[in-house]
Structure formats: C-alpha cells, structure tokens
Length: 278
Image 1 (cartoon, one colour):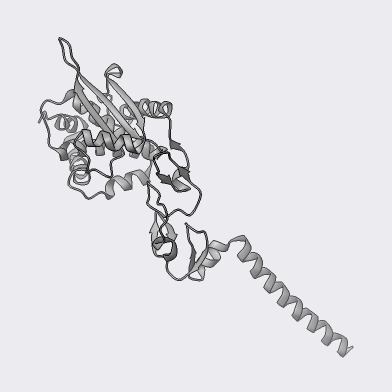
Image 2 (cartoon, helix red, strand yellow):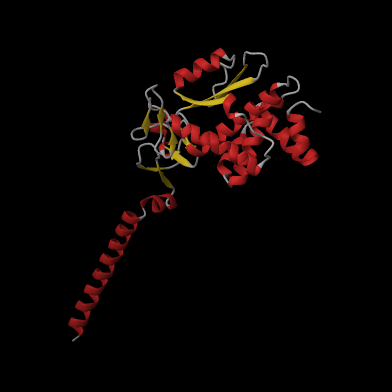
C-alpha cells in the first residue's frame, strides 16, 4: 500500500510539471507579444521578430529594432517607419506601411467626395459663412512628382511636409473672380487626407474674400485652426495632436495664435481677423 502511494505521488508530481510546462507554452503561443513585452522585450514592427532589450526607435507607438532602423530599407512616406514587406507601392516610388495603407485616398472621385464633405463639415462644426463657389473651385489628386512641380511653380518648393496646395488666379473678363485649384497628394490615409483638404478649403475661402494681403503666419494659422476645429468636431484626437505638435513659426505658431483669438474674439471676430478686417 505504501509503495503504491509513493508511485501515485511520483506520477502526480510529473503530471503537474507537465501541465506547468504546457501552460507556459500555450501562453506564449496565444499572446506572444504581451508575454514577451512583460519580460522586457518587444516585437519589431518592421521585421515582426521578437527582440530583447530596448528598441531603436518608436513610430506612432510601434517599436523598431536597431537592425531594421539601420538597414537600407524603404521608408513609409507618412510615418517614415522602415518597411521590409507589405504596404502600398505607388508609381512615383513612394511606399506606405501596412498601417498607413488602410483606407487611403487614391482616386479622383474619392478626393472630390472628400472635398464636398470637407465644406459640409466646416459649415457644421465651424461656420456656414465659410463656403466656396463650386464653379470657381476644383480639386485634383496628383502623384508626388506632379505635386512637387506644382509646389515649385508656386514658390513653395522648400515645404517638404506639405501634402496639399491651393493655387488661385483671377479669371479674365469684365469682372474678375478668384479661381482656385486645390491639389492633394495621392495615397494619404483618409483621416489625414480630410484634414489636409479642410486646410486647403481655408485657403480657398481666404483667397476669395481677403480684404488685404496677410502674412504667412496669419494665413496658415487660420487654415490649421480650421482643420483643428473640424477634427475636434469629429473627435479625431490623433489628427488634433499632430496639428498641435507642430512648432514652426507659420503652421505651429499660427494655430496657437488662432486658438487664443477664438477665446478672445469668438468665431465671428476670428473670421474677420482671418480676412484682414481688423
């Protein structure tokens, strides 16, 4: 009886050991990223390999290992993360990572729809006073090479972060009217594309209604503020954070100026300031 009990206890101990090992294996197979992270590692967003230690850099919360960061790999046009595979490839040579290949704006019909939606959202979340004459405004989706050429012709060749551009000329005839063309870079993620288009809508409205020429901070700051207000209305915190993160003297400082003016003057007073009516 004693020998049988000892054999049973021995089997039980081996059984418990086996179950423990099996549990750990199942844990790592089901949630490898979480388990590995708790042990001080991470999964590289470029090569998708589990790595120990500290990542080389983080892109929008995605960690990249030193090997991928230092390798001569193509980079995402939007976030600059190195790409080992997957994502979108464009005819102009640009690449989008997997994250920024979801719901992108690539066709003329899509950009026209977003352009109409932008004016509707501006009227809803900011003011119905901000509108355009559709007969005097057009929107075009362009590849990177054509976009850079348009930037050069407009004297904005150095603005490497630009993803949208508005060109306005006066129409001929007895009564001249401002005619605007909006160019949007192909392949932008949908939320970012809408943010860019709303910004360009601000330029269209200003160019059609300005009382006098304004400095660049005043122009760009208003368009950034307009984009910020629409994203705020939509609850898109990521886009709001990206707008607030800029620190340059035109877009970044300009947005901060208009956010203060909104508190001081209200929407009506701010719109007068944006048109040079102060």
